[in-house]
Length: 232
Image 1: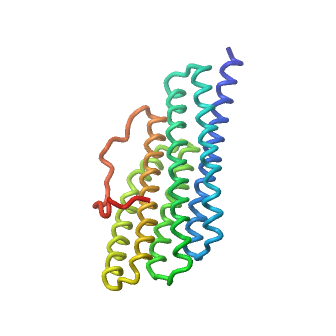
Image 2: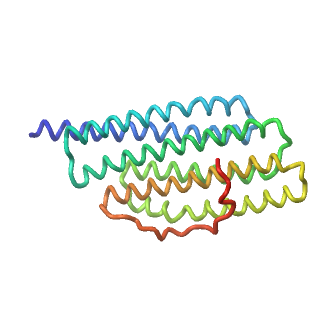
Image 3: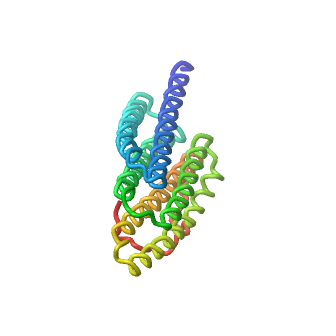
């Protein structure tokens, strides 16, 4: 019996290691996507787009491992919650990778356009989003429920930042129609960042669920929604 328990523990450790690797890839994609926007670097943007495939592959590996472990070990209680959370977090990280890739795609046309001061605001939002992603991955690695709850509550700051950028971009576009194309690209980038922030709260919810067995609820504070029609 001890051998079975030990083997199961090893399976859980392996799954957590794969999730950590996947999280690191998602962070890397987002960080370099932001660098490509700030540095007007279309070559880096294209490399980021190609890198997203690695995250997709990692998601499949995590799914295969989780399904195999559930079938073989038939876990219950917290062990089962860990595996369910792993499936959901892998899916969330895959979406984060897609959003990072979308940001890199927007960086390509921006790299050959007239620089806008608003780009700096978007990059600052990007840094805050990246910090939130890094923090939630650390909370997951250490099962830090308190940090997870802080992140869950903190996302309202990204919502408000997005709303501020949205208003500023619209003002620029109204004042100078030549900036409509660039402004639209920046809006899409900001929207993608806001969505990544939402995904970090989903990971925070999974951490809370894994450790406590309870739901964080639906009453997370949110900024006033703007530009909901925008899609990345």
